[in-house]
Length: 121
Image 1 (cartoon, rainbow, N blue to C red):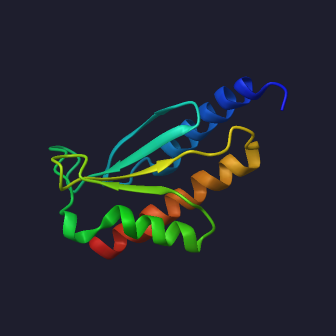
Image 2: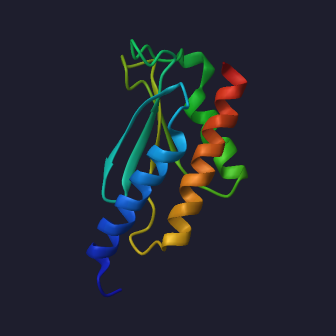
Image 3: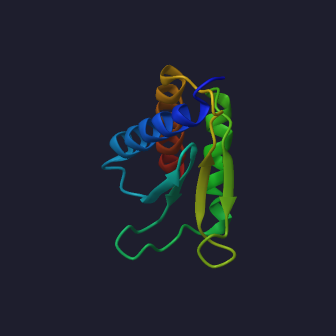
């Protein structure tokens, strides 16, 4: 694909903006960070102290299961806070992703996070 790196920058900016906009106000988002088309959403029990959710809740895995049911593959990760607790999900769309696909990724991610959080909070 011609212009692949330009697409990565453009779609990465789009994904960052969409995630931040759609997850704004979700009270258990600790951070949204990334670069290009590699982004992570960190989930915390308390946004003020950044206290993580307990590992036994398996929040990141819950998000992955829900996202998969909704048509999105994401990578769950746990233990990022202290080696045991702490959840985040990684998103790494294809470098040739379209604007429509990025919008869908952000929507499904937001919905999966919201649904999983409603199970544990």
